[in-house]
Length: 127
Image (tube, rainbow, N blue to C red):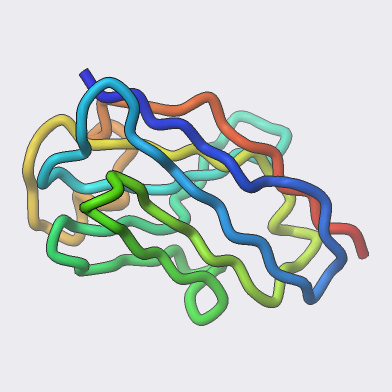
């Protein structure tokens, strides 16, 4: 099974940028979708972005136009470039890999379609 490993989190001022990485450990992401979700203090985990094996990308409404997801299949790594960061982007960011192949845009946003989750990386945006 694949184990996503996140890196790149940290503390940044509002308006700044961070780039998160998600590397595959154990096996490759293969052709399956990979997504980013985030969780601020509270019970809800929010969809951030996802990408298919052929680079179709999807974004949550709150990050569209500011964040960009990409993948390097040769390096088994998915990236999340975060620009124009806001204090409300503060959260633990999780990378998740699907364990099945799907193409429906609806499925990319659903947490239960992702079977493998990383430990998360903290992103803190100061005002």
